[in-house]
Amino acid sequence: MDRNLYPGYAQLSLSMELGDLEAAVLGSVLRQGKASARQVAKDLEPSRGLAYSTISTTLDRLFKKGMLGRDEAIGRGGSRYIYMIHSEEKVKGKVVKGFVDRLLTAFGPTVISTLSDYVDDIPKDELKRLEEKIRKGSKQRST
Image (cartoon, rainbow, N blue to C red; front, top):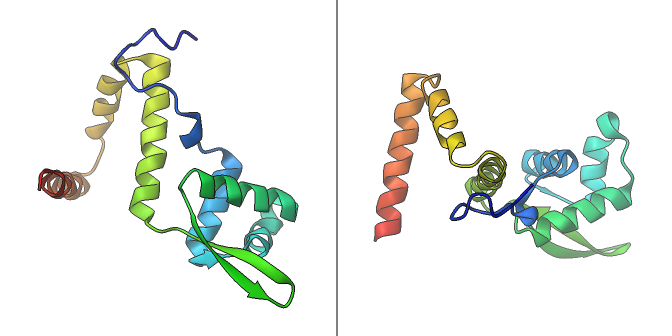
């Protein structure tokens, strides 16, 4: 695909892409609040059967993408990292931005009109809540 086809629009950001495994690991940390690689592996094991090293690598990748924070804990077996989500809203924002950027890269500006068509399907009370949130965010950025 020609990435210069739509100049002025965000280019595909590989660092913000979130694969299925990363989404599952992120969800596990979110459910647990704070978790080590071993805790995430135990949480995901029944459905995925993943190796500890795979989970550990994925957690490190999410940390490097800025999706997770981590603290070092020292215990009987030595040191280990404990991962946590600093801001659920910030993580959601990064994931959505990455997704929209990929759509813009793939389909160009016409994707915006397609997304706006889906707004009509959002229940009015939810839409009102979202509009209020956008207003608050705009006021905070302008001050």
